[in-house]
Length: 189
Image (cartoon, rainbow, N blue to C red; front, side, top):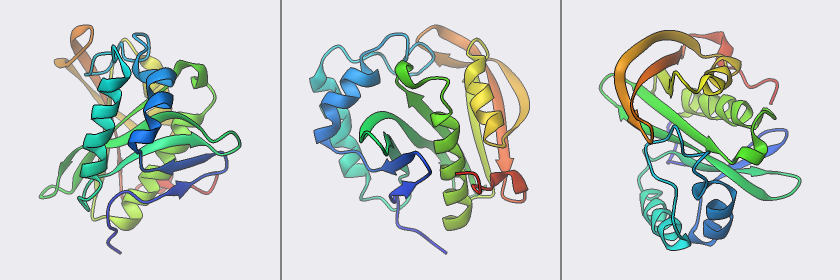
């Protein structure tokens, strides 16, 4: 069953929704300006809110593309925007996607990233033709790998000196999940 891009998704504790320029203050304050949060990411911490607004304007245009999948992660009970989860790469011929996520440090270690990832994996396997989804993390950031594992993704390999982030060139751990894997279930969320 095909889907038209980013749709609103809900879990027990979260709402995953499209972002808007009106989200700039929350995004900037909650994670985008934090060097600790962006340490293992490919983009620099935002020095001012205008950079955040520019990125959100770009996202708003991209939402018109039915193959663009990008969600803001919002806590249901508080309506607080705490991060993002995005399909960062797609290969339609191979039917593969790569997912990335980012969460403000105040919400680390509470299961929010895994909960969002499980929901997005299930959504993509249900509503797109993807057969394989992967995620990668700097090997110096093992907590990201724990999120992937908790979401049912399996460790595949380490790509040595393969990635770059705000620390420079890094080794990347690769995790993946296939459509045929039963661990993509969201029964718990």
